[in-house]
Length: 161
Image (cartoon, rainbow, N blue to C red; front, side, top):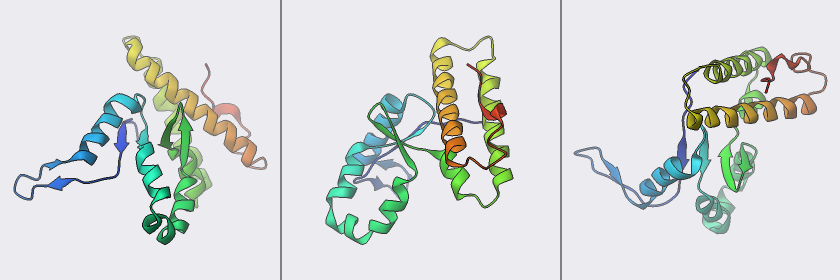
């Protein structure tokens, strides 16, 4: 771990040219727009139109209701953008709490490492400030949701402002 990415996820038509292996079409363009103009911070943003399509189309909604309920647990909203809440997902989907704690600690270290860089531009610094806020909000929610977990009662997982 240590590379933070931005991704846009959309729903729709694409075409894959088997000769050149190029991908193009409205869904690809929309995914690019989400990644480059809307995601802004390191995260995986899911297109609101894709979510509306999923919930409005009975062919998708009715046959995949159980999957949709499962997927919704992994999504979080921020400024009208829906993104994958990978930290909480990782914590609750893992069977190894200590490994999850180690990953949260590494996540913190990588963010702090970037924030401590002297030559970081303001634009990039803002991305890591957002990531720091996201990290801390997840840790605070985990502390509330898992009050008996001694790994989480330690505030060492929080990033100092």
